[in-house]
Amino acid sequence: MSPFHQQTLVVCLMVAVLAHSAGAKSAGAKSAQDAQKRLSSLTTALGPAPVNLGTAGDFAILAKSGVSTVPPSVITGDVGVSPIAQDAFTGFSLMSYPEGTFTTSTQVTGKLYAANNNPPTPAKMTIAVGDMMIAYTDAAGRKNPSPIIDYMSGALGGTTLVPGLYEFGTDVGFSTDCTISGSSRDTWIFQIRGDMSIDANKRITLAGGALASNIVWVVKGKTTHRAGSHFEGIILGATSAEFLTESSINGRVLVQTAVTLQQTTVTSPSKPRARSPVTSCGSSH
Image 1 (cartoon, one colour):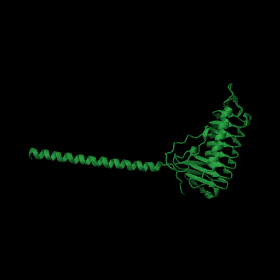
Image 2 (cartoon, rainbow, N blue to C red; image 1 turned 180 degrees about the horizontal axis):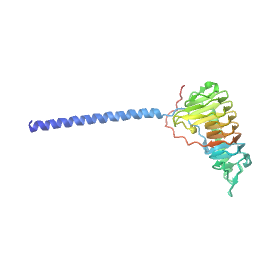
Image 3 (cartoon, rainbow, N blue to C red; image 1 turned 90 degrees about the vertical axis):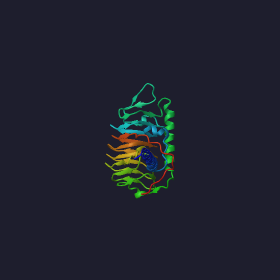
Image 4 (cartoon, helix red, strand yellow; image 1 turned 135 degrees about the horizontal axis):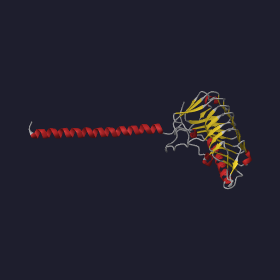
């Protein structure tokens, strides 16, 4: 083969290699774009817009008329009462500090605040209770997305609950275990016009990355957590919350009357992740 033909062959091979490389890059870019679109669809938040707890979200337990414990309870997070005074903490064996703005207890990993502690605590507690009331009114009044009405007639034991807005004109109960399934960006609001209860030794379990901080139970009546039961989510209650022997909750208990604990474990949940700036979507069953 002549030198000219050899050079021609080399040039042709180089052109072929460059063309293949350009095509591969183009296909790779398209593949990456397709993957990004698929990822975006998977991470789009489902459920209603999150409920803003304001400063009420700084508390594991917040109540207007008192918090009592039958020791030993184990509470991770702050506990607060207002407008009632510090005497409304019963069973905690409170320890005071010279500044007088809070107390502590061996049962609480955090601080206990009351309306009659020294400033600035009274103002702090007034704001927190006000934020709790605003959050309750907000969550109870939600209409978007379209609610799932009276699902399973309120008998939620044995169900798997997907993201969405649920509305119950009845009591809600868990006679068997229940699963709440969704991603860490998804949200749930349960509007309950009656009471809510979970039977002894029954559990609510999270699946798929769902976070307790994204689950809100807004209850017009009382809530009862029977012995050995485990619950997940934020309780916004218009009346009381009762936790019987060795019950537990991963969440917050924010109620407008009293909280009673009996060797109960209350663990403040991790903060929710920020949602993408898209319109929230409901889910169907």
